Amino acid sequence: MTLNNKTIAFIGAGNMAEALIRGLLAAKEVEPEQIIAADVRAERLSFFREMFHIRTAHNNTAAAQAADIILLAVKPQQMGAVLNEIKSNARGRLVVSIAAGISTDNIERGLGGKARVVRAMPNTPALVSAGAAALAKGAYATEEDLSVAEAILGAVGITARVEEKLIDAVTALSGSGPAYVFYVAEAMISAGIEAGLSKELAGKLTIQTILGASKLMVESGESAESLRRKVTSPGGTTEAALKVMNDRKLVEILIEAIKAASRRSKELSGG
View 1 (cartoon, rainbow, N blue to C red):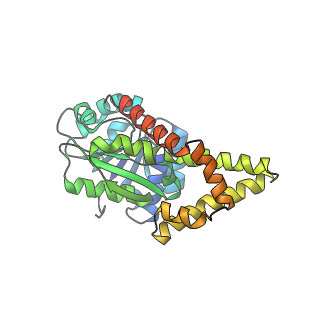
View 2 (cartoon, rainbow, N blue to C red):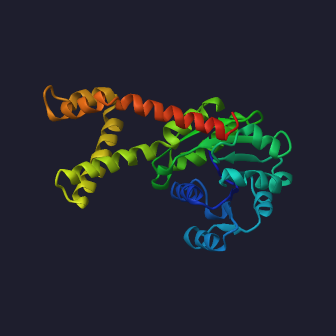
View 3 (cartoon, rainbow, N blue to C red):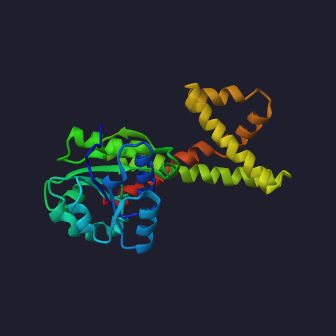
């Protein structure tokens, strides 16, 4: 889906907006003059102008009025006020939201009616163009709207279409997922240090191990289970480590943790 001749207004100029703008420009999906970033922070807008040569605005209403696509990249607690600001200028425009916990129904009502809304749940690896985002369309959005949203989010990683009822599960798995990997990395580094490695070396080896394992899963086409079995020799070191993890019920802990994240996502969205 092409974004030719489409002007995109980013309402909120935080890290995720920066990642998306950087990705869109790097992929040549749009030209700088097709992007407007709106934010209350003057220094942030100055950075965006200097870094990306895009248009900026202090006024959300003006940014929305000048756009074909409005991308909501504000904190959930700011959403109500922002929707009230832009609702008179959002009519007929595609609205894409990356705000956690805010349903398409809430956004549609906040915009005063039958707004075309697509909700997306990206994750922080989008900052290095390795993100994973799930998208769900609201009651009035079209398949073409969904394709446009995919073109935007796809500039910084992979996308998947889901029913909105699954967004909480996506939030728990891939939205919060990077934190789980970082947590495991912290533990691996600590274990390496306890075993006598320097902090620098333990960190270097841990990061490369996680990167390499992820790359192997992507490029081999094999399942995680199959790859785990291949590296687990009977009576070997890996088996000894996995036995401790199994005895301590690590798998059950991780599953319960992700379920807890999903429940919390539902609570935050009023579900």
